[in-house]
Each structure stands twice: as C-alpha cells, then as structure tokens.
Image (cartoon, rainbow, N blue to C red; front, side, top):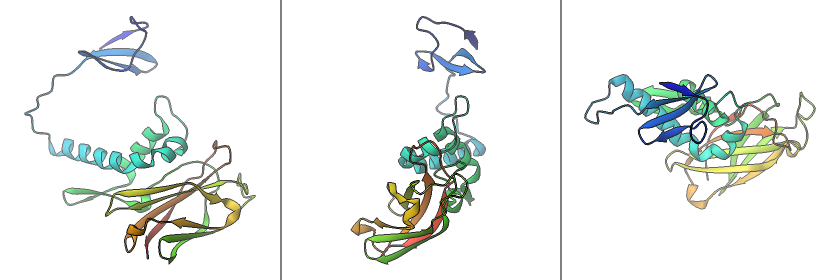
Length: 214
C-alpha cells in the first residue's frame, strides 16, 4: 500500500483500473485490487457477516432520507448513514437458527439530544388510517412547539415503507397517518422522532410498536 499527496488528478477514492484509492488516517492511500477466487467457499463467519450487512442495508436504504440526515453527527469519514448501518449491524439484528432478522424495538431512525416523544400511543381507529397521540412536552430541554414530527411505517410482509416528513408538530399532540387501502389487516411496525424546524437538531427516535391496520 502506497501513500501520496497528489496524484494526476489529486487524491481519489474508489476503484480505478487495477488500483483502489482511499483516505486513511488523514492521508490518501492506494493499493492494488486483491485477486478474488470466485470458486472459494466463504467461511461460516464470512457468510454471517455478509448476511447481516445485506439485511441491514436492504432495511435501511428506503429510510435514507431520514436516517442520512438525522442519525447523529458525521464522524471523520463516516456519514450519519454509515453510523446507522454500523449501529444496526451490532445492535438490531437477531440470529435465529441460520437466519437473521431485524429486531424492531432496537431500530433507530434518528439519534440526537432533542427531547423525543412523550407517552406516544399508536392506534388504528378506522380503515386506512393510523392515529398517533403524544404529550406536548414543549419547554423540556431543547423542545419547541414547532418541532417537526417524523414517522416511519413499515410492513414486513410487503417490504414496503411510508415516510411522513413531517407528520405534524410537537404541539399538535395527535396526528392521523393515512395508509394505502391494500395495507388493510397487515401488521405495521412504526417509529417516530422530532427534529427542530431548522433541521439541525434531532431526537433519538421512539419505537411505537406493532399495530394491525383495519
């Protein structure tokens, strides 16, 4: 592996021909692309690592508009989405026999020091709609009345998501979330969080549980 200050086009990242460029400890480095034996069977540990990563990537990508902005602050070369991926691989994956599953109560769609939802309750009062009720905790910490409520709904059996950005504000205390009619009778996983009106500060999200649509 070689280091350099300036290449022909300056430092670069990614694969170019037979070399790969990257940034490591504040320096640009370049190494050759390793030869891959496509016939080599991965070890059991390698299989598990790949499956955990693949599961988390597929699960998080549809939520990137929220997670990519509000999952903490960038750390070096790690974006909020990179941090979210690392967190979920370590904390939000269950190993069940030879398979892996997302541990929904451990899922976070945002991280931060803004006050989150107080006493949230998610119900299905009528067909094609969910209702989220919560307590207005304006004035606690950094909480403000106009903080924006973000909600993510996910139907595992369909692999489909609905993102509400925003669904309402902190002072509203009750919001309705419209659903596609074909979600009727299906189990829905849900998470919610607040972000400030400027989009600069976020709360650590709350898991709202599972609710069955009418």
